[in-house]
Image (cartoon, rainbow, N blue to C red; front, side, top):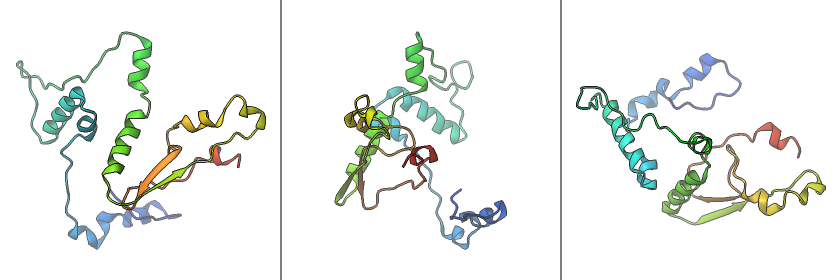
Length: 168
């Protein structure tokens, strides 16, 4: 449920600020997602099959197999070694960055590029953490070193975690 900003308010005020409580709600048309963009953009057949099963299930139809059991493809995947498990449970953000880059490229308009300023708080650490290494990191919750934006590009505006800004 989308809500308007209601800072420093109690929970009741936040509920009243929700879009569903607004007079605008009667004017809003509800749309449903019908395409699994991750499977579509990455051409992953397993994700596509799983996405189709979830869509069928969401429409109230049961994807049943020959025995009459509900069948959801590849729901439980097994791995052969711990490194495969780590890759499956904690994947890196490269696919997310690739999808973001592809989507931003499709938005019309002039592209604006912003680069972060990476540095260590201790000058002695510069030997162990060169700027190139710092620029290559993509920690979750922070934008990439090179941020590409266009007018109309959606942005999630949230505060930087306190432990990052604390040293500045």
